[in-house]
Length: 283
Image (tube, rainbow, N blue to C red; front, side, top):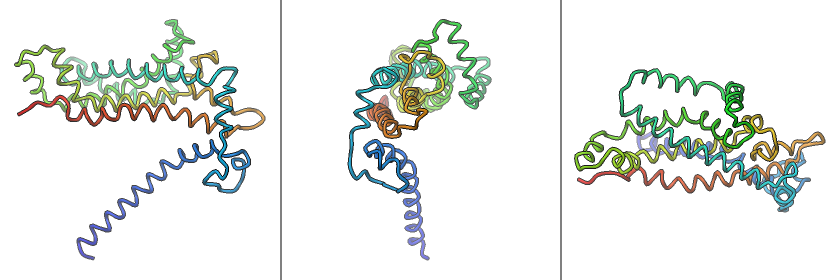
């Protein structure tokens, strides 16, 4: 086999592997959406039906109109949006400031602090449930969305700090020094030079924080005692009843729950690209 043929064969194998990985990742999402549009006789069957032969909107209509646990589905969507957006805003602000301090300043205990961040990331979230639950209750934030936001910030902040630290450290300090020579203050340099260059990392951490807070089930279930404070993942559990599982409503509700995540990603992904070139200097 010639070198050119081997190169072409390698590209074919690599592309084939990429397509297989893509199908493996996308198929569960497709099955969720398609099941939401299937009739019950097509859902509860042993036959493999890849496409709905008769589209129905009954499952979506039932989820949107009847609600869950005597509450509208929009209440749970609103709660999830408040928790997810609050986690992104608060967590991103703290993560960016902490990452900047770690990457730009040398202080006692800096190495230990980075090790602690790694150790915290290794701990399962369920292992922190009881300590965080007791802390939230002790400060009077139990049964409140702000308490759930604080909890999600505590869970996502170590990852955000560790990732943004890498982005901040990759920005040459000479850019900041050049801005100082031109008369810019520290805050101006931070917002005009450093912030645009670390925007891709900030977007990446924001997406991670949003998805983590949006999909959280355990903490939202145990920290909120009333159904009016539940989020969408908890609301979907009500479709698992003693008499059976309403898979059509679950898939329809899961599809509706996925849409805000897609919208959020589409809104911020442009920043991920534009931040790569923003803030650069001429010459």
